[in-house]
Length: 239
Image (cartoon, rainbow, N blue to C red; front, side, top):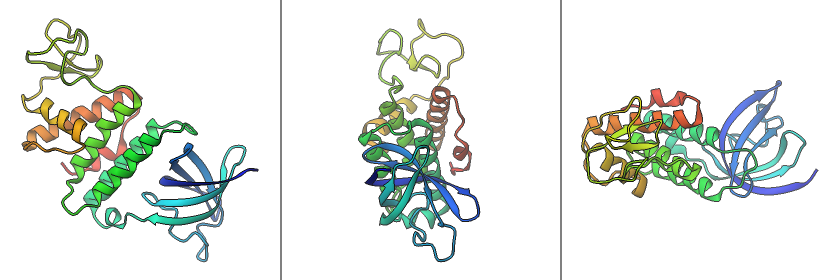
């Protein structure tokens, strides 16, 4: 078995046997990996709390046939602020869940790693609005995954300059001539709000609660449609 060193973010854990745990980690160099942390659930485990979700860690692992084996873990950042606040925690859970659903195993994507890391760092900032941080992450995640919604022109013909509706199936805003099937009527301010989230990773423009909720619903529905899986954490994020 080859020994290798990586840094990563713990996305998820699952108990294995009486004392072990399977850890899903998004690494910077080789993408998403699953590894066994042996004895991690024992009181005197050498890993302690170093392999909990959200934790940014330096790792030493052995490459296995199906699951790698964690031999050493050192914390780079525990992101304790996320665990200490319910709103930040559930928003962070949604970020980790979405990342795990999108990212393929052992498919290197440094930009995806940095997107997740940046979102967790933003959640820790004192002035962070947790739901907005999570929605911005989901929207930018669609871009890196290759199915970013069209927000500035019709997704079908490219026309601009008229009131658009939003089509989950057609890939974004659509004009009256191109829309097919069910489409969503959105407030005039919602699309600029989503553009702001996509471009800046935050909302620089003032947005009403209605616009924020509407934008969040669109982002969640759009992502779920394209990955064909629900985001369970989304319902727990305060809006």
